Length: 204
Length: 348
Image (cartoon, rainbow over all chains, first blue to last red; front, side, top):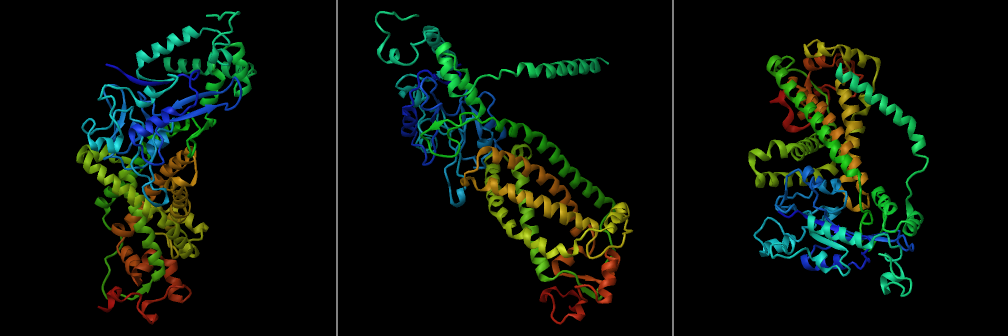
């Protein structure tokens, strides 16, 4: 059985926020919630800037699941961490526990009162019938049930964000790292955009 | 023996590591943009400085608006997750032991104090303001304690019995009540404090009273003024210290839209839990003694009046003051208007 994971290649991410937009559009995400976001470290520093797209990491030992007072989380056979919005009470415990800031709460009333928690579903919907109207309203599209991968990863223009079976995507990433080797200027700068300078010849 | 040897082995290793630490830490691992830019040149593909920055929780840049959206990894949630397990276990045990202890005590000892005879001369122990302040606090506090316990222990104790749907409904109700009743304490706690602080001064006599705590539970009380040392303990520890802490930490948790970050909420949550369990265990004793435990105590707070006999038995020094006319509290027949119309048991 596949074990679904996200992997973001920091060498490839160009901070286009295509994944963020794809997610919001595909899943009709509630106002004020971003299931995915792109964070840039060392922004504007040449040679040091790296961008990483982050969402729910679908942890094997998920802190949200451990601390939920109504036990509304469950893990699918494919390792996707989902939750039941009908049971969720909006207490915020998952938000305290999660290191990635994945669980978010649409404001449900005055004084910042928390509504039902919303987070990335790995485009796998919720406990309702696959791709039913109720499921879409609460969780968004169930692309896994359609045989597709998460919209963010499929939409990624540089294929920096990989989503899918952990074994498969880590193998893809491993191949990339091997190919890159230690080539200094193949990673960023002129040659990334326009190819290696003609006479020097690119090192492997 | 084997375990002891292991222990000393670990200890020796730890001492050696500690001694070696300054030497190891002379070159801290490089972090920051300059280190990464350098690393990119000398060791391309090795982004260790960036990942160290990510791991430190320092915020990066993001277009997504919100609190801490630039933080990729916030580690303190793990501390919170781990801390709440022992806090809930020992705190829950403390409350359970307090409740069980009171149940056993009640089974053995029953209600303390003499059965009141009708027609006794009454003393106006609590003014209407005293009582309103107390009941505003007491009712809010009890609702908060019960809903807090449901949220904390319902998953383990109620959910397996009543099922997911019903428990979720109960938990939503509990969360709503907890969040909306909580802010009432912003008014109730200071009101209660200023209403009662005059008679809650601590003196050496209070320590004497605590020295005779077992005598108290056997019905041989050390004479006290208007409030005995146990009541003063509830006033200072439960109300003034713990409930104030609970109100402050509760407000941090209750209003997530004032820009406080996760670590503030995680810290507030841990303090809230510790304070709540201690306060609940102490308050359980106070509530027991005020209702089932001592005859006439509930009537005092409900209707404001106690009999002469009750006052002499439970608060001898205060009774002497009332008799001498030195106390602020008077005999009911010396006061013109009744405290509350329906409350006058001796006139009916």
